[in-house]
Length: 360
Ligand SMILES: *Cc1c(COP(=O)(O)O)cnc(C)c1O
Figure: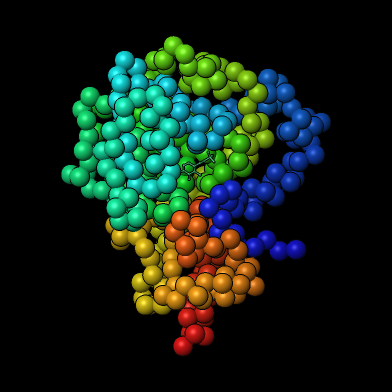
């Protein structure tokens, strides 16, 4: 049995060292006589696991003390509703930057709750660019500005953090969190589904500045109110205990790799290697503008799309799997989150070069 290089966009690869550690601790965690999955979330063993995971995430991301970290469920998709429910306050409009499928979904959901001002929209070019700061049509009276720093499907990533003055900035970081250092203090709220760069599915992380708590609209369900979870250390109801534990192992692993500085360097190198093969040949192409290219999700096309199936079949023979592009973009997509080893990218690069040579 061999683990393959899995380029899935999510759920995605986890570090082998993390899975091995979980395997060692599977039957019985640290003398507790039970698996983490069987523990009461209110018992002292589990409470220590949960608290350590939060402490490690705070340390790895340098999260300032005036931010709460919440370990929720419902996926990033639930945040599309929780953000307006909690942040509108007495305002009735919010700004959204539409740069791909996920930000479009977020803005569509917000329309249930408020007037949505689309402050930027790159659908005209098929979501292949990032709007510049000067192009953002921001409303100074907006309750908040929402954007998606990395669009997982299009492979489009902002190369800057939008400047929004006093208006709180909200980011769906599902597919870019932990990929490099980020200045948390620039954001009012960051959220991310776990299954890309954090851990197993079932967990959603929310990092929220504490002055934004307590403003949810009156009809907000308790489970959709950030304050509920902040006041209960994310234990208002049973949390996704095992996913939270696994995320904690991933945070420790990131620290062992040298933290986010080191992750950023490795991730940049991995992405540069792939873009170099794409750019140094007219056999491969990238649909994305150069300044908007993602480090995490790299779509690429073959000049002759009739060769896609042969490319994918040969890749699979070499243990390089889940490379088929999203149906809305076509071609291929290589998702290379933190857990994708550099050797996986090297193996993909070698196959791309071999495949191109074979066709000539
Ligand atoms: C995967 C993803 C989502 C959806 O996440 P769920 O956890 O499935 O709800 C939302 N936004 C982005 C940017 C994503 O990559």
